[in-house]
Image (cartoon, rainbow, N blue to C red; front, side, top):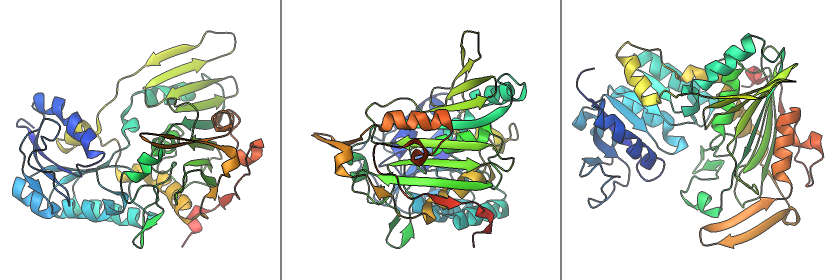
Length: 390
C-alpha cells in the first residue's frame, strides 16, 4: 500500500477517543488517513476530534463508507451493535477492526464468522494484548519445558472503577438493554483481555472448552458482574482460572501466571512483560514489543502478514461470554462486606479482602468459593459441556 489507507472511525464519544489518539502516529507515518467519523450523535463542529480537525461527520455507517471510500472501518461502538455494524461495513466493501468483545452472544459470533467468510474481507477483533510478542515468548518457554509440565494458568485483575464508570453510557454494567443482550461484565469487557490472553497462551483460543465454571458478584447497583471468577478447562484438561474485580483496594496491572511443575512464568500482559521464576535462580524479566492490530490488519490486506485476531481466534472466549450471558444474575455482595466512599468522580466500593482473594485464586487455580472468602459466596454456574448448549 503506497498511498495512505483511508480509515473511518465509528463511535467517537467513548473508547473511540483512544482510537483518535492512536491514529496520529499512523497518519504521520503515511500509513493511514482518517477520512471521517460516524456516530448516531455526530460530534459538534467545534470538536477538534483529538486534533484531527474538521473531518466529515456522519450518523449512518453505510452512508459514511460510501461517501468517504474508507478501505477499513474501526468499530468502537456499544457491544450490541457489533454484529449489525460489522455486517454493514462488510456489505459496503470495508475491512473491519472490531472492538472486543466480539459480539454479544455466541449465536451472533457464528453469524459474524459467516458474514466475514462470505465477504472475502478481513475482520480483526480488538484484543490488543494478542498482538504482544510476549505471548510467543511465554509459549516458547512452556514448549521448551522451562517450568516443567504445565499445571495450569491463573489470572488476577484488581482495578478500581467508581460509579462514574457505569454512568458513562446506558449500556454500561448491563446484562440486557431494550430486549438485547449486552453482557457488559468484568470478565467479558474490562478484563476480557485476561480471558482471551490466557486461552491464547494455552493454545486453546479456537477450541470449545471442555468445561466452564463461574461465580459472579456485584458490589455496585448494576445488572452485571463487577467481581467474578472463572475456571475453564481446555480440551486437554488444562485448568485456566481468571479472578477479577473492579472494586479493589489497589489498582495493579493484571497478571497471568503460568504454573509449571518446576517453576512459573508471570505475564503482565498490559506491560508486555514476562518474568521467569525457577527454584534456586534469580527471576529473569524481559520486555517485548507489540504489533498494533490496525497495522497488522492493513499488512494482512496487503498480503504481508497473517491476521493476528480473526473472529475464529476468539471462539473459546465467546464460549466463556456465552456462559456468563446465560448464568444466573450476579449475587450482590452485602453492604457489611463493602467500604463505600463518595468522591467528586463518583461512588467507590471496595469489597473486603478482595485483592488478596483474587491473588489467591490465581496462585491456587481455585474459585472464590473454594478459598473461604470473607463474604458470602455465589452459587456456582457450571457449564461442563458448552458444545451441547442449544
